[in-house]
Length: 153
Image (cartoon, rainbow, N blue to C red; front, side):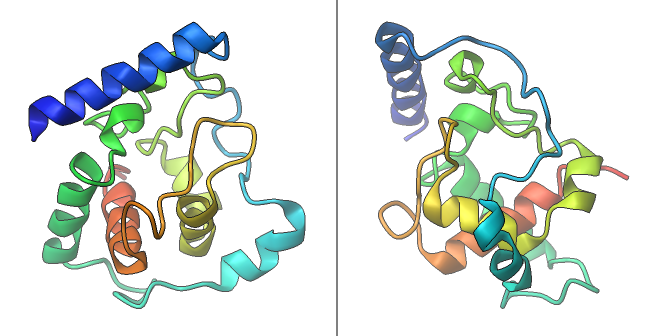
């Protein structure tokens, strides 16, 4: 499975390179919202059913999120194994993928906003919708818990 994920990432990068859409570079404004303004209020109210924001996700939820991030969610292809936006396919995207190691990003964005992007993709970026075609909503919440774990305060 690891081989096929690597191949998928390389093919994705090749498609972007040959389509003329790709200009590699880091995300220019890592704290900017990706949810359209008219939908942001509702998205911010969406809460994870897996844990309360006042508590951390359990190690089990984070581990499951990691498995999805690195596996069928294909997140690792763009966001990288370290969550820093430096995956093989992410290197050719403009803007670059989110850097989940950026703690300022995590302070500004609510879980519901991240879920909105997983469900709808991110206009103007290479992020495509993942729910329901690739992962379930529950799996999306687990991925968010894992993405949050990249911020080492």
